[in-house]
Image (cartoon, rainbow, N blue to C red):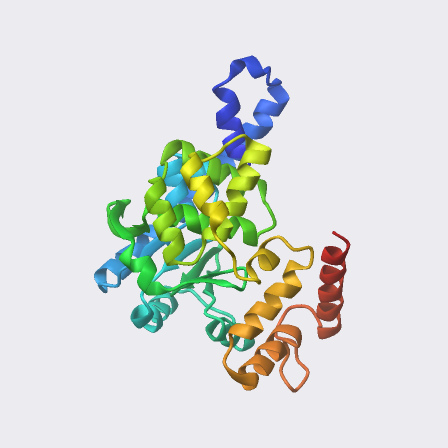
Length: 320
């Protein structure tokens, strides 16, 4: 939040920002700008490669927000780049990333990602590591799945750094940001993303409801607007509020979004969506016992430390 806070407070001298705090925030901004410029170089190379191979690429989250919402990518630092490609281009896209020097963790993580339609994560090591999350669809809270066809049918052609790219429409972008917010435990940056989006881009409210129905995400919109009204003093037009309130959710929706034990319900939703007990047991093995039969861990932590951390995470959310 430092870079955005620095720029925002600079626009309001009456805030009485001390010189020490201003310098500290300025350092954050400068560091973010350097990281952003480095990321731009890698992103240009990626887009050059995908454009040359005629593989359409849709940019998600930070790459869109930094340019169109924050108007300065350095104000919206990205820890990774989220790319969406069509399912038929997925394997070819992975190969292009490998040829560009990106690598992914072999073994269980890849198997788990493909089983559950999660992004496959690629990393390019160097002075500054660069991470790419390669998607063929979007899944959130172990319940909501936005299929590739719905996303690409809603894609808008654009340009970034002189390269051809695609983005989600403002309405689908906002829906994606909403479910991403609910999936990541109310991070402050996610709320700033939503508020700035509403103030800068602004969705077509009728189309937002239409897109929400199409991808089955009216309930996340309902809860986001409840929180925006309660904590941020923002409400959509009353017809939108009324239609969202009249929607009757599936019995799992409120449980995976707001329930105290939502992470348990999300695990249940994930298992429920898989076909057959063979797939469900395989998923449980990959999720709960992520080491190969010879006992060597697929993660940096030893298996007993991994189990301890999982138990600690469970207890943390049990007490909330």
